[in-house]
Image (cartoon, rainbow over all chains, first blue to last red; front, side, top):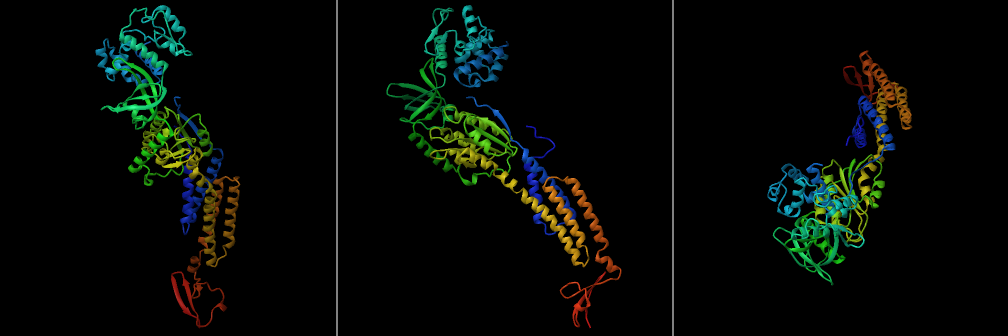
Length: 68
Length: 509
């Protein structure tokens, strides 16, 4: 199957978001400059995943029909 | 039509007549080899790879006829084996399978009566034994194609090749049954005398050994026998450790490619697909009958097919049923195929009494198709429900950073509070708007970054250390707090004076 190009999978985006959140949770002292990069990444991911969850649909493929 | 096309056409018709797959008649590879070699005699045919004495005995004549250039007898265009008038008739009747079967005649489906054509013996008034048996078997096979017969097993034995031979009887009579090794093993039953069974198969009159019912599948009949077999198999597999909890693999948290095996017509497929959620899965559905004589074969075929696909998890599901209707899921071959599956398997099989052994061997056993769907979606539900929390951690985390800066500045005794207060409010308003989805993230971040740079530069330029170099000092008390007023210190207090290059303690006089 050919995956939709240009976009990573929803699961991957969510995992990445989880990691960024973990980064913020773990840092004792957050670098302002690094932080803003993470905030940006996180913000894009949040926006993207929320939107995608609204209009995502499952793909159903009948690979083989049963014989009887 | 080429010879290969004719052979293939014959193979298909023969297969549908016997209710089996084409390759079970003669594999396509062998047909190709035959078409290449074009054997003229049975001996030559025997040298073709994939053709043994049994195939030659069964189909040799027809194959050689096709190779000799004749269309198969079943081919409507043929005029070689049947006379002209019949050819026209069969051509007209082409759509009914019975008409295609032989030159002998048709079977009236309603009455079961064999309608002999007058042309049957047109070639010769006398049948050879072989020709008679061949045609007899064609009729038997087409009329009783894969029928199910129930009876009690007697005289059960298996020969050295693993084939099973026995008889089944009821109050009226007895029939001989042969079940070849492959079919017997597929059935996954242990037969012995006195057991009530249902055999699926077709009758055949063997040239030497006479009449026999050739079984393609054997099921136990009756709840008692099934329960006994269930318990015995459960005990055996348990002893092997097949149900051990340390064999269980955890399901992938966010499965995207899901294999699904169930009946295309049952309620389970709907229950599963509506309850699994919309998370952009790619569902690879392989239909299979889930009960009856074909179920084991179908399910095994589906498992074998999906084994080769790139999937994250496999779901096998069906609605509830009695022990009898769930037999396929208590079949040893099916259970072992699930155990050997390369990715985690979810079994969602309803049951009235005992859980099926397929449920026990699966990595995740659910009791309904809906519960199986829940097992697949649970990781998705969890992470999606956390998005709001992540937002808070990320935004809140950064807010905190900005807040820390604010405090640093405060500690240094400078008046950046308002400046950083302003930055915080920019940040907050950005995220409020972001939450409402009305903001262009890239642009907003750019603005925010510019603001931060501006304030950082400002902070650098006005950093206390810079002023220390100009000759200012910072005076702190013993706790490190900055002393801003003369009246805050008293005679005898120790103070700490910070210069640009270090600190010195002093005592107030």
